Length: 55
Image 1 (tube, helix red, strand yellow):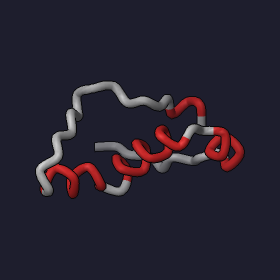
Image 2 (cartoon, helix red, strand yellow):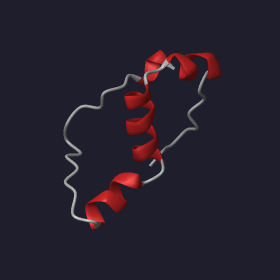
Image 3 (cartoon, one colour):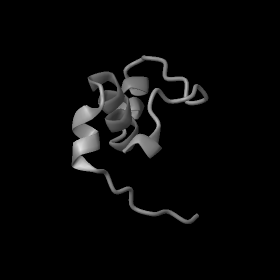
Image 4 (cartoon, one colour):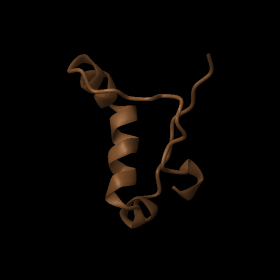
């Protein structure tokens, strides 16, 4: 598997809506896994609400 670091433009991050920041953060930091362990359902097949090219 090849992975690369994601570079985020701070100005673009500040312009993002909070719900996009929340979903991005939950996927990057593994919050969705904790949510699933507590019984919440997380559909990983749904498209994300954000576009990384906006950053």
